[in-house]
Length: 194
Image 1 (cartoon, rainbow, N blue to C red):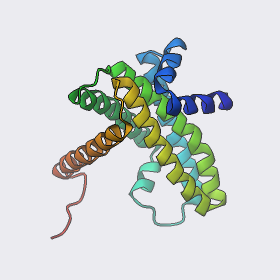
Image 2: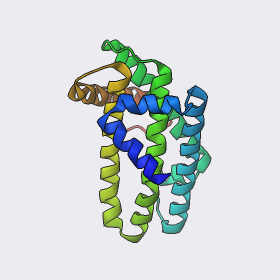
Image 3: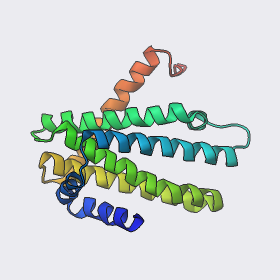
Image 4: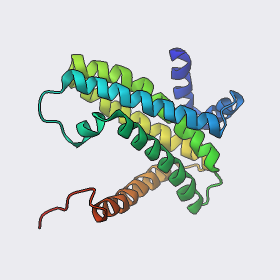
C-alpha cells in the first residue's frame, strides 16, 4: 500500500491529470474525499498529540497548545482543507480556470493523505534525530507545495506552473491577512503593542 501511495505521489507531480483520473476510477467522489480529509486530519492530530506527550517539557508554544487538543486540531485541519479546496476553485476560476469544487476537493484529499504518510516518518525522525526531523519538515513542505501547484494546474487546465505558484502564494498572503484581521477583531489573536 505504501508503494502504491508513493507511485501516486510521483504521478501527481509528473502527470497530475492522470492522477485525478486514476482517483476517479477508484470511485473517489465528494463523499470519499471528505472521508479521506477527516481521516487524515484525525490521524494527524492524534500523532501530533502523542508526540507532544512524549517530548513536552514545560513551556509549549501556540501550536503545542493546539496539538494538546486533538479534536480542535483535527477540526482546524478539516476547516483548512475545506478552505484550500474552496480557494483553489474560486481563485482558479478568477484567472480563467475551468475546475470544479469536487475536483479541488479530491486533490485536497489526496494531498492530505499523502502528507499524513510523510508525517509518520517525520515525527519518528524528529523524536530520534531532531535536526533531520527539521530537514524532513522542510522537504515535506516543498512536496506539499509542488503537489498543490501541479494538481491545481490539472484541475483548471493551466499550463504555466510558475504562474500557479505565484497565484498560490498571493492567495495565501491575502487569505492570511484577512483571517488575521478577522481573528483580531474577534479577540482570538492578541493585539500587537504599538
